[in-house]
Image 1 (tube, chains in turn orange, yellow):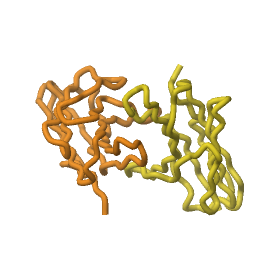
Image 2 (cartoon, chains in turn yellow, blue):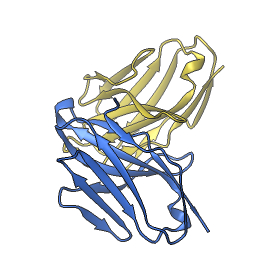
Image 3 (cartoon, chains in turn yellow, blue):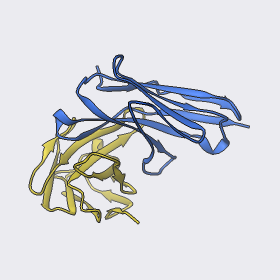
Length: 112
Length: 111
């Protein structure tokens, strides 16, 4: 059974904290993505990576950074969390053949 | 203009109805197309890929119109369990394989 696993389902952090969201996939996929999902705004792409150590900005990269040191792991970093980063964060992966993308179960982050 | 646009709905239909969703995309270099389904508080899951020739899976039919740059999803004989948000997804190879989502169309099937 294919899997994308996010490290936490629910997370509460304080304003100004550095936050790490981890995503691991076991399908040997080249592409990995981080999205945030907010009511009425749909899924918005933050960053994606098409190979180890490679990253591309998505539509809303401000306030975020990413790390892809190993093929199976893609980390999203909030350098200094703010309340407007309260959201559902979804990680996804897909193969270079660009067939189906698989999602993790999501991390609901609340910044207080 | 958004790269991928969908009518957000909600679509409220009775059981047994036929319902159709459309999705338009702006990048003519788009190459792969999908419909995903997302249940409340869950992650999106693939419903079906969309092929140029159109494809059908049971009560679901997907169509692609490259000339007009839209894809559609038709659901026949709606069931209560079809209630969900349906997301249109486009991949454009000239953007490095980036997955681009529409904002989703909410469907509610009523008894």
